[in-house]
Image 1 (cartoon, rainbow, N blue to C red):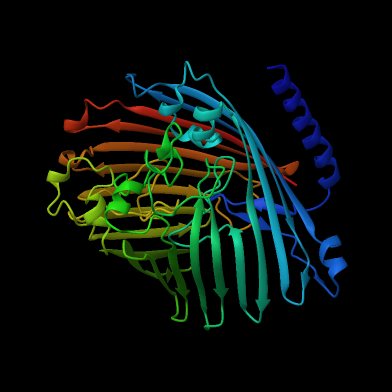
Image 2 (cartoon, rainbow, N blue to C red):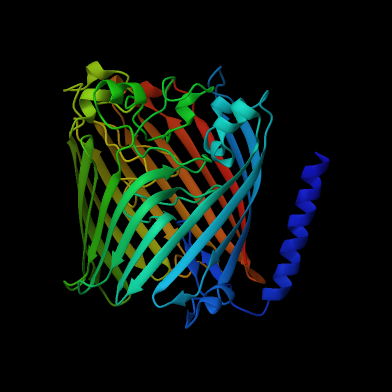
Length: 487
């Protein structure tokens, strides 16, 4: 406890000293509400190797997260919990020499919780403050990782990046809402060579989730044959949206690769007036693939706009269904039309109205009654339509309806006036598949301290109320308090 107190004093003092240094300048970096970092200081172009190193820039971040997750009814696997953590990161970006540059990012965090009061197996959003695997095997409440380590080459409007990196596409996100981002090891190509377009291609052979210290398979769930340690399921892809049936043993028995890569395509085009076309796909060879098409059309008026949008997703089972089944949880397979098929589809629609600083989003999504959608790389197929904090609404035969109100959005990541987001979500789940009907109420606020724009706070609260024949399931409150200081 004494060491933790000293750490707090050191961090607070460092924040104060740094704030004096940056008080009269714009922040070097800022944080958007979707957790993506905006770099206001761009990398220099240099002519020699020495300047490539000396004229690079360091980007630091201090953060604090506190989670209070309360169930209406507690039992052996559901317990009310209060968990907090402190973390820091330091990223170095070199200058650019003949098109080449590199980046290295170190992340660390320390969590504060009582395992007797808050069993680690029961932790909900706070589980990403530490590595559960390291704690259960070695007692570690802290985490230190190499989050980024990559080299890039740029020419014309194209960038090729190799190594451990943040990959922001429709199917992959850094999702850096806790202490450590979700990262990938592989090759990423980004280009604007096609007029009015952005194109990304990625070949990702490893992933490192936010609560992992070691990179792991992109689509394999650990089991006793993949690791002799305690909780082997926490060694591989144990994301909440991961298919629990695609285990090491099941893949081996089916003669499937346990280390298959993730191949991603992400494309946006705005060549048609007031129209945006998004196309994305992924493939995990000999297991699963998916394709997405989204159309948005903006209708502009004098002082506001209306944008209807449509999204369609088709999932193709290339062998994964025979290994793990149609359900991500591997339960209630008899409730599926084809228990061994992961063929799936989603349709989603929304109407977004923008008036001055306000945005109203009325959305609908429908996962057809086939297999469950599988996208366990921290990007969410219903995002922008009916995705709300912590809610997974992409199980088969699930319909969702959401009304969202947003005020104060911007692209710069500095919110001198509060960014406010509220929503009401209704989820119509299939009880036979283990899903339930529920109302979810959400409110969040983000603001940068006006006198210290490097310091940003976030408060988010969600309340899940199970309704109808689901009323026997315990309601819960998910509340989160976060501070980020970027320098």
